[in-house]
Image (cartoon, rainbow, N blue to C red; front, side, top):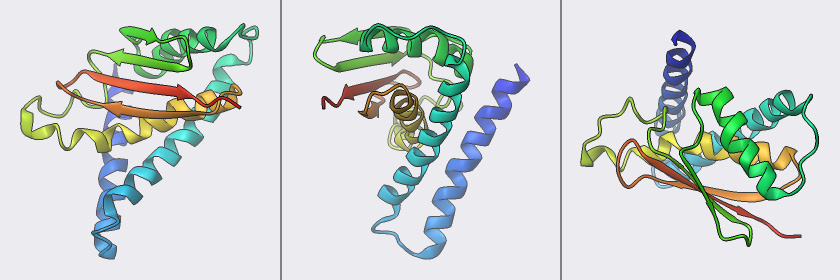
Length: 161
């Protein structure tokens, strides 16, 4: 349990540091996009490294649905100590992963005014998923949305070659 808290606090501090650093440079017009991009890139690299470690002893995957199931069960459990609550797909390369109690935003108050702050805490996790998928041979676009705190939906669109 202490490890979970440490990871959550580290994540909050990283997000805070990235935004404060950008603000101190005076790049207010580019601030949000640059910060989100930097956090997503950090998550991408971490996702690549973690998926290597988690899949080193597992057999290959049959198809992309098999990969997504692995991410929702094993990958998510190793990082957040719980599985994704819901996985949906249109069987055409689009997947929606829903976490009804996403660990990295549960520390934020669940008031309506905090909904606008939630996206900056999701960029790292989007990168985490994209990096994991990339290392498994699937290029993707990952976006996240929060409509009711602390529930979160990640939309993964697999890029066809």
